[in-house]
Structure formats: C-alpha cells, structure tokens
Picture (cartoon, rainbow, N blue to C red):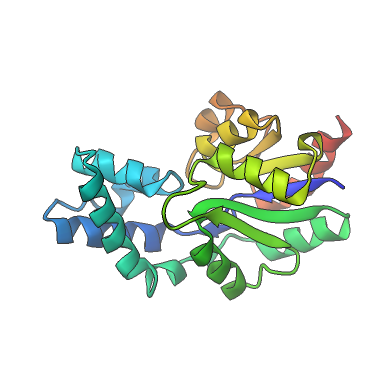
Length: 218
C-alpha cells in the first residue's frame, strides 16, 4: 500500500517559537550569547547537537550533552507546545487517508516528544504511528530512521514517499531509495530542497494530494 512519511517540524507544525526559545535558554545558561529567534531558523529541523556545536563553536561532547540537557529542561514542559499546525494540515491528512495512503510521522525529534505533539494536535488517526529518535541520539540521522521504519513496517521503498522541509529529509529519502516532495512552506526553501533531491515542490499542504498521486503514478 502506498505510504507517506511526514517530517514534523517545519512540515506539519510550525515549531520555531518553542525550538528557538529553548535554544536561547540553553545558550544563556551556558554563558553564550543567544541570537535573536529570526537568526535561528536554520536550527529548525537539523539534529540539535549539530546546531549547538555550530552556535557555540565547540564540538566537545560534554558541552553538547549539557546544552541538550538544558534545551530539554525547558522543551519538555513548555517548548513542545509553543507550536502550531500549518494551515490545512488536518484536512489534507484526512483527505490522503481517504484516498488509501498509510501515513507516518518520521522525525529526528525524540519520539517521546513527537508523540505528545501529535496527540496534542489531533494528528493520531490519519497518522498511524509516530517514529522519532531516541533521547540518547539513536536514529537521529534521518536516513537511519527511515531505514528503521521501512524495516519495522515491512514497507517496500518503491511504495513510500518522504515529505519534508529540510535537506536532511531529502538526503535521508535518497539514502533509502525513496522519492521525496519538498515542503516549501517550511524552513529549508526551494533551493535547498531541490539541491538535495526533492522530486517535486509543494507550496502548501493543499497541493500534496495531486503531487502524491503524480509521484506514485510514475
């Protein structure tokens, strides 16, 4: 059965407020300057340790672990709900479900948080299962995560399609031989998405059903 893998941050939800505020919280606690939220758009999507290494100019594992702990200190209670669905998300997911597509969330965000967010916004139903990384960083790489979902759900890569807004989604899909649609309403942009393998670009959620049908039609 044709299956859709949806990224979460920047694709189904606009999570910038929570993510950027938690990054600012962690940097301040570490004694580093905290950039303005609009200077942190690039942090929405990629693995957080990579972002903190770039922000602090330091790749010391102990420092990055501390930064992640401080981030989660705020995110687990406040940040995960400083978030909003993009327009037409629920309507589109229900429409795709009605057309017979299986749908999963496949996000680098730890699944313990991603599941709470999906439940909070009523995504469970059209979304069958929420897959994410572990808190220790296991399956934080999008390609590894997609491969894990394909194996767990016994899905043929030819029958699956990744929908996301960042290069990590596109590269992960390519690593696993999936087609990919780039969500240009998110934080990556058309140039980034096409450069890393987006087969099609969607300007908004309502465009997805026609594009999905086109991809699976070959």
